[in-house]
Image (cartoon, rainbow, N blue to C red):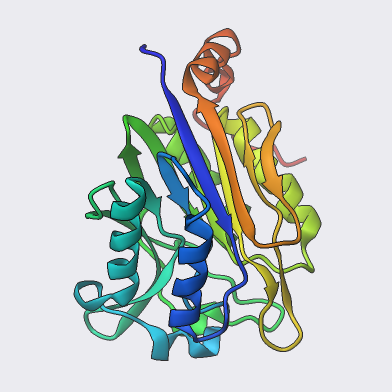
Length: 270
């Protein structure tokens, strides 16, 4: 297989609740710091912030989406593919999804992933407003396969294993992950990379939400062995990393752990 390298840029920012223009301005400011990259990754609901009660009034139809129009502009200006975090999509029949758009370097929308797992615990009620997506979505950018997930999806290793079985190279998780759960974020972002022998790009919001809650931050780019290549803790900013896919392919050949998976694990209950 030919050698493949790709540069990833991840943006960590603090979204203002319900203020799209302020959030557009913030992304414009942060992307201005990127000189050259292949893929820009944004966090979950960066355009409106994390407030489930405000989701419906800020939802957008695909064909009229000002968020996608904004990302198209950024993609063209930076000559970069964009994994656009997520926005609230209004679909036919007044159904709403937490959707991750992917745009190519020409600013064309080439993929859309709808969040498969909705978080509705400890006072959070995403599932009250949003419908579950039906399928995982893997997108090919620059000849490299990206498996798309959003926030709470990371608690379900099955979706990542499915991507790996379909030859995923890089897993992406776009999140608005609360600061009350630092250990799960730390452990699971690394675990999903290690157990699937893939790179992981985990991009989170940082700072205040509503009701005195805060997002954790701690966006990070992790390699197939669980080593952190770059990260940002408590701040807004951009992190970048060059990913060497050939190194990952060589490692997989030397340590082909997926070959040892049993088709069925039947539990003997004693």
